[in-house]
Image (cartoon, rainbow, N blue to C red; front, side, top):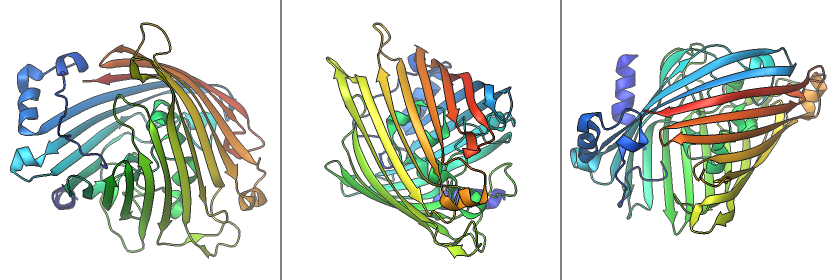
Amino acid sequence: MTKRLAMAIFFGLVASNSVFAEEEKVPDWNAETLSGNWGGARSSLYDKGITVELTHKSDMLANTSGGVARGAVVLMNSEAAVNMDLGKLAGWDATTAFIQYHVQHGNKSINNYAGSFAGVDNIETGTSTGQFYQAWLQKNSADDSLSVLAGLYAIDSEFYVTETSGLFLQPPYGMSAEMAQTGQNGDGPPVFPLGALAVRVKYASSGYYVQGALTDGIPGNPNNPQGTHIRLDKGDGSLAVVELGINTSEEGKPFNKTAVGLWRYSARAADLVTGGPRRDEGFYVLAERTLRAEQGDSAQGLSGFVRFGTVNKDVYQADWSGSLGLIYQGLFDGRDDDTAGIAVTTSHASSKHRQLNASDSSETMVEITYRAQLQPWLSVQPLVQRIFNPNMDAALRDAWVAGMRLEVAF
């Protein structure tokens, strides 16, 4: 396993955006991280082309009523990410490498209490373990318009992504609920917490872009969630995804992104009723915009997103899901870096799922949250969630979830 992992990182080691921009701002580690500049070590590494980021999230959540049962859990995620500019480091011009490793602490599930189809918390994995999430190499050409990436890769790092939805804890604001349920045995596509061996190609010019990826059809080892497993087993098949869009969003500037995507597994899926083979495919659309920017600082103000996607109605519990949300950065005077938000997701039950189950027609989730940036390296984020018709199960009462996330950059 160790040999295969080393080979994957070295040989595979291919971020729609270049990790190191031509006019990149030098980080101020003493101000932006808890552990500071490590006595100058971080600056020295940076000059050589290496940037190290360490983060930790702790989520304290309770299902206060409804759902399956009342209960509370603590979930934690620690992560290390290393960006390498191989032009500086090894003389490989326009080449970058990225390695991301995370550790999950806590194998209890808040969703065992809430009973939601789409999930409650985006760092819940159901097991305590450490895993490589991504490890890839990327080569840019044509004045950085064209990039090719290969290695251990997660499609939710670049595909079906809206930055504004990243504020929320509920999982469908990362990878959407309808696509998260796909793949053989519902194991899902290569998204958090597991990437898969993949190749991704992207071309971008004047804000327009087209990107495509081909990945292993089954990330990791579904029978062993512990540790990192890079496998290309017979019968895995592949997942192909293509996205076309326009994105003129930049850091500190208004959001403006619109995209449409198509995806398909090469392996067939089983019909819910007959068990016969069916195509495993879908499409999605998304958009995000800055709706009102504050004068003098376009990073502050009101922004919103909308996302919608479908899957084969004969194969899965939900045949489509849609979400929308609003966030406001700097809502209160003197709190310019704080962000408030509200988001709603509906997952629609397929006709064949309703045929087999005493099911409601959909599940709808609402989340209201406020992220308080207490220090550049420390944030606290209280939240409340309401889950209507959990898991589309007519026997479950609507659930209320309350909690808080603590996030630290070391």
